[in-house]
Length: 379
Image (cartoon, rainbow, N blue to C red):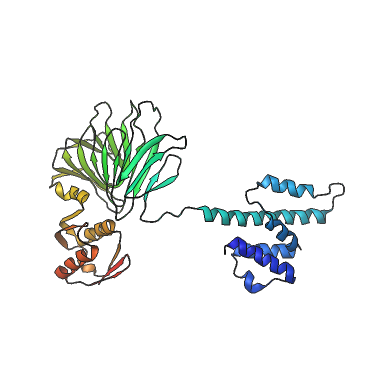
């Protein structure tokens, strides 16, 4: 039984018995308790009951005002009557608010924490199943994208002349692939989001905004540079393959170049460009004055796309964060002396469960753990 039904039933009982049952009133939300007391104080319980039994919660405030105005007698001003109708109006507004609020709450879509969300240009949210097969359709019936299993692809349409954005949000524990309208393929890692134009426009740079981690395979277009923006840093390319990691909970923003070339710059110093060649990683955060460049094994930074978790001289603190994202768990570490210890390890999330990973690491570092649903406690 919902709150509105409870309110009506208590109004009925109160009118029939001639008194308010305090024990039942106490079960209602505070706003409804106050409303019944107000109705009783103004001697309007019976009138309110008749009203709510026939109420249309979608009526506008103007219709309610008109209804009350019709009942007034304007010939002689009786201030007591005026105040009485003012009280009636306030109470009726209160009733409508309660019923509308309950109706609106029941219509709200609850989005699961582990859902892949596609935020459309009008703010509507569409849930994407990892194994889905559907079309993304605008309100005017136009198909802008199609989903097949773990990938969504946007169509190219040269007639479009206005930038319209979508945003995709990937929860912990999942990955997803987005093919943009120019053919650029973006592999999205867990706990990431990407904001991008539904259609790139001729004469404009191809700009997207990343939070989290993604691997970009950018379609070459010399006339329209591809720019990834994230937390005060820009990565500019023409056509290339690179991995970018920019999680809010991590200070460093890392760009690892696999193929082609990229230009890195910070918003603080946009004219200072740092070029990477394949096999290099550029690292920057807002505490540094320059972008640090080093040679790396790119596989360590890209094998997450096949489910591999590769750790090389990674601290336990860093490992915990990645395990939480990959397996959609929360790890509570009570063995603080482990945090700065460094590990070399490799796991595959498609083969090894979080229990198997922790069991292997616990045997090496002599710790115990307890799993309670999605919460893991390390002692």
